[in-house]
Image 1 (tube, helix red, strand yellow):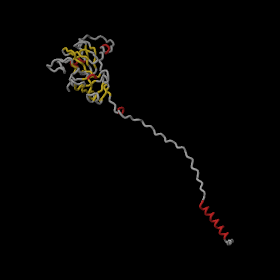
Image 2 (tube, helix red, strand yellow):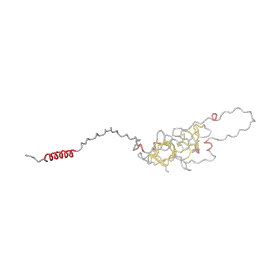
Image 3 (spheres, rainbow, N blue to C red):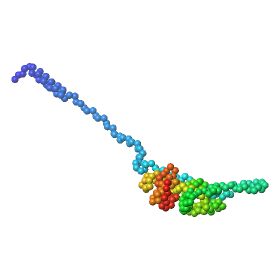
Image 4 (cartoon, rainbow, N blue to C red):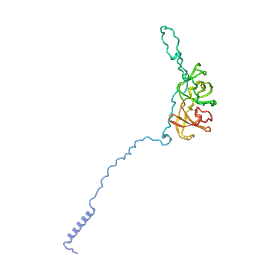
Length: 264
């Protein structure tokens, strides 16, 4: 069979068109670019540490501690010869009658011509022994006997110190302090205000008459305060020292008789 002369031309055209279509369908070969090299991931920097705040009893405000405010133990008197320095000899002078020496002892000053009333003994009331009182001033002599002619054994330098009266003779009182020291003091150096002293161990002043009540202050041994009231059937007393007021157990201080009632 013979084909027309233009058949080879058409076949060539079709072959060229087919290869062009295939090339159009295939398109340009896209080679994927290499991914960038991954950098190692650094761990985040640790946050700065902050101080740990404890929560609970340790973070609550501290209970104030009350130290002693002054000397609570008596002192031995200073001998007169040691108290006054020796003077060089002076030229002889005409002899004149010696003047009456001035009375300088604390108990002698207090002993006025008239008898002072005992604050613990109203007029006509019977004596109550033993009983507690307190020192009236910061200079009180304790003597070996009931009179100014007896030697001074001890000198107290603490006002409000409680003492216990055990005997009486005229205006003199045989007293005993918290350390067991005993001797005679003049009535005028005492007053009826009731006071206490903490002994041996710390005492916890509480807001109520209960061991579970909150602590108001810690009283160190030697602290002196005022007894405001005590119920006869209670183991607690309402007391005050400085600006702190609360309740103390009787066995934590000295200055009250067993079962004694003290009214405000």
